[in-house]
Image 1 (cartoon, rainbow, N blue to C red):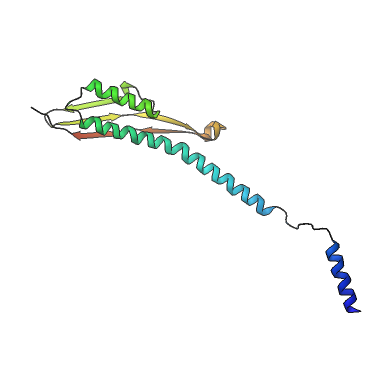
Image 2 (image 1 turned 60 degrees about the vertical axis):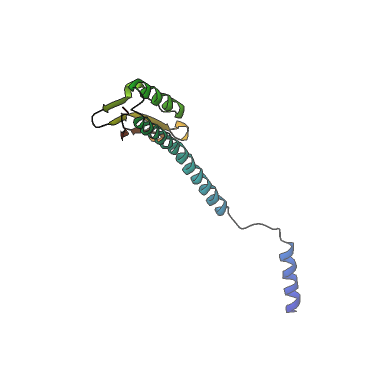
Length: 146
């Protein structure tokens, strides 16, 4: 008799519809993790490009300061403004300051600029807009050929 009850219970279990008892908690967690990852990548990409461009311009400033013995001040400013335009930095000739010291044989180049980064499609500007200020100063020694 016990075996008949067991077999009937097994048959009832097999005939029951296959209903998942999960409520979707794992799916929700995975979705939240993916959204967080996308947000981190978005912010990282937007901010990293600004700093990479600033580093490229700083390298160009150092290169131009080292070539100060053969370049005129106007050429150096023109080259730096051109490079800034190439990398997407809003820099005008008035933002660049050159100090040439022929006695000490060195050139100091300084510049200042601000870059505004708009995150998350500028959805809420007080929270999604960030202004980065850059003011590199480069001092290089050069030799004057006689």
